[in-house]
Image 1 (cartoon, helix red, strand yellow):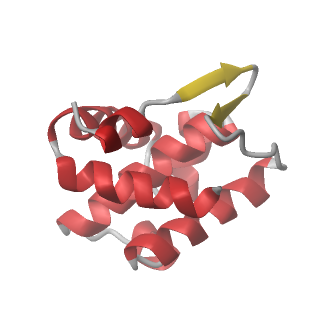
Image 2: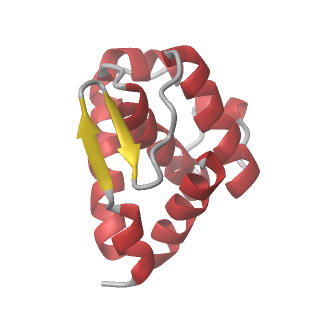
Image 3: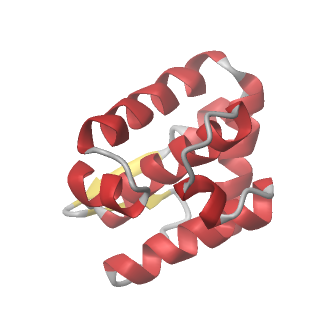
Length: 122
């Protein structure tokens, strides 16, 4: 396991909010979701509009999966709420979250993207 993979997995659960090792400050749900999408836009270069689009390009799917995972962890939104943020069904949000977990285990490029977003959030 690479150092980036190890860093990407260092989350600690506390109630509805999950803190990264450096402990992100809790924010209202909508503000934190906007912050996460802005961090993805800065780190990866995929805009929130692209993440909400119906595109199935790999880069956009990966950015959307990172957003879904981080919103689920840091904000504690339900999959229905997350799906609504991205114009998707709750099952699509669930699948995206599960895909991100798998990609963290097997894809170093995805881990680097994920960790660069997490660094933007700190």
